Image (cartoon, helix red, strand yellow):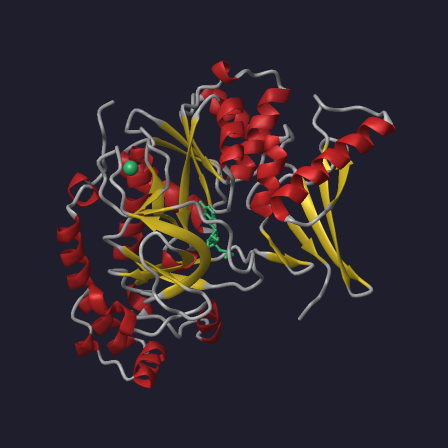
Length: 435
Ligand code: ADP
Ligand code: ZN
């Protein structure tokens, strides 16, 4: 297959050249931030670092970290590095972890972000012949705006659907022959389920690819979506603080996401000590925006846990790759002292032939954690025989015990009884109030 790139020179740049480019950008960026952002200047002064100390990427570790707490402290304008007269847009996080962050963009920032999304769309095999259905939420959330802008840059016919109204999504998809679907994986699964219910087979659906991200999803869920929709499903990663989706994207090899490292430099650190870890180690992902103007975060701690790799990729891109994030440090539940990520539960469910429709409920009763997983029965597995249901619950609980090391109490619930998500799914209800 001929390889297509949106910005070939950057996407296939030799590592040494990339490092040089990153170093030049970093030196300029640190100066820009030091001069214009009092909040970060204070952090640098406290650490005794001056802009002159940063002569290239190898000096990056000298800079202080920024965390979500800093963003909250500095809300709303404290980290702004350009006058508001030069800013053209804001976006805000979806507030998954309860705290909103507001990010600012100049026109240059919007452009570079849309370029990143365009790289993702081209890597998913699409071009100006394609019809791109954007079913991420529009508005403050970055998903809709990012993929919408990327689709325009590529020249695809853009269907700005936003999320929700699934009937209309399906009608437009069919009538206008959408070939690319962009939304959260949980919404893609829901659209797939609705199409199936309406009697559509994968071969009836015009889609050929999907770009899904903004929340963790497993490979099992990917296969499930690919089968129902008859497509190839590509992962995309990003966060509002660094622009939005498109910070990293998947290519045809699908063994991790290429980071757009000409704009976003990635480090992996030990979340406990802050020490930078060597390539291949698992740890917290930290990003430095190398040329964003209005909201140029330096060494921003994402709290996402993953691994970086510079192994050669068959797509020809030289951009460093990040593994699928295994969850955030704050997504991780500690139940009876054991670390549990919702993605582990999802993997078990899909392996055992269930759909990814589940909710984890954690509570604390007389100082003991209770751990329940409600799972929807699938129409194929449906039975009303109590002994069969009990046996199925037991077998699922066993499979989870093997994966997690602790025993959940599994409840099979009626199909469709767990609320579907049109944006990011709510997988965990933690009633323990541990703070
Ligand atoms: P919020 O923090 O409110 O969810 P965002 O909408 O900016 O704000 O979400 C960014 C976060 O979403 C990332 O830090 C990451 O945890 C998660 N995320 C985004 N894309 C992916 C992906 N492809 N796989 C796993 N997690 C993702
Ligand atoms: Zn690749």
